[in-house]
Length: 382
Image (tube, one colour):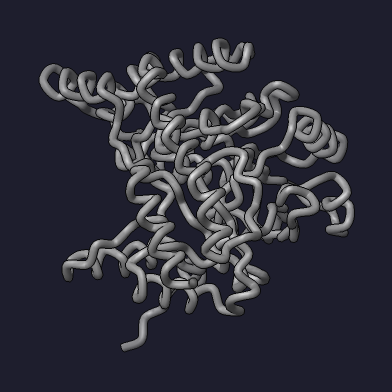
């Protein structure tokens, strides 16, 4: 018997998860693996979140919530926009989601039809591309490089040719950690507004920057879809909770999709996450550690041979050009893991066309582990 497998399930894998599985298998065999492959804070949820979760477990039934999320959380997120960016956001436009992954699924399904064309930077987060392809949306890859700080520009969009229906911009970005300035973001938003292009702003690394703070697209338009997450700055990856701010025309479509696809986001995570916004000192301490790790690698990676790095102005990644060492980043990362027990992600995860010459290192872990990884890489390549 031969049964059909739907074409939408034949999307590319998220390679970083495959690398993590291989690294974990080595660790189970006794290897001291250093995880620089996965974009996950080395710390757990802040103390206030844990206390709120404990209280909820003891006192709350933890049943379903509204599909768009509990009112307390949506109102607290609205206060976050007022306090952090000076922007008033109606809580009715805020949607709690099952991680930012759930937000992207809801955003893409509500904003784009099969056959629409959505542009995104390459290198970029692979799940954008893979989710869009799974729902029948054509991906328009914008090949960006160091000359544009690995970010799209209106000029690059013009060179892309045919009309597009959507644009995804991430600042800070994954895998490069690069950012767009306030003026650059405003220019991209206006470019899209003038051409009826739906603007999707990935802001999940907001709060993790090493100079100027990140800007939100909401400063320039109420028509953008803005996605954020509790996984990165708030250090709550396994709680699977994110949010998005949607324009009024998408609120009901998103709600209907969320009702059918997810029923509601995890209730315990929603209740506990309200407390996350009151844990700023603890969370900023994590960002300070990322900054120390970044400074350490900025000195150590070039000495090990990784001299061509994206600027990493935010997030916790270095995207390294290894074209002088290999033309097969996947094989290079496998050799690195076998020889040093340092796990990193091949660039082909983020850029199928040119990523064979790039590797991404995450520096979100403990500083002593980052230092040990740098020493191992130096010894391997020296």
